[in-house]
Image (cartoon, rainbow, N blue to C red; front, top):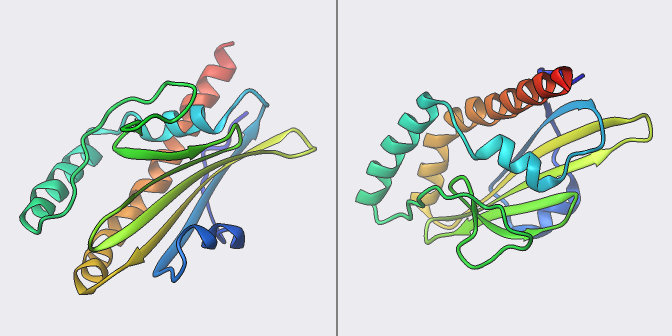
Length: 175
């Protein structure tokens, strides 16, 4: 059974090497039972389809960001075996992938970010899915942008994780 409660956890120290001189890092985790989950399937469940309210916020973000010359990626689906140029999960470009971990991210003039989706099977049979966000701001615009989006980030990431866990729990109980 998947628990729909999402815990804020300390980001793994090893991930800091992905963006030296971090400005911000956080991580959220959800747990459940089972082993048939890869980082790709977890990332797709979390980021491929967002509720309307998140889509509305992202559209607003994109309109504002365009005025400042910031990148505004368009959603697309990633279902291939290996990341290809332009491959995305939701709006996030795929940078690297293993069975247990998917790295999403983007570098821009104002900030760079990485999202790490990690799937870990404990010896007890408990499966942990952790989403870690890492950001390195380059300038005042990046720091200002980060301050503006953080309150929404802190709502959206746990919501998407919780939503993916609930969907997974429903599928498990119907199987």
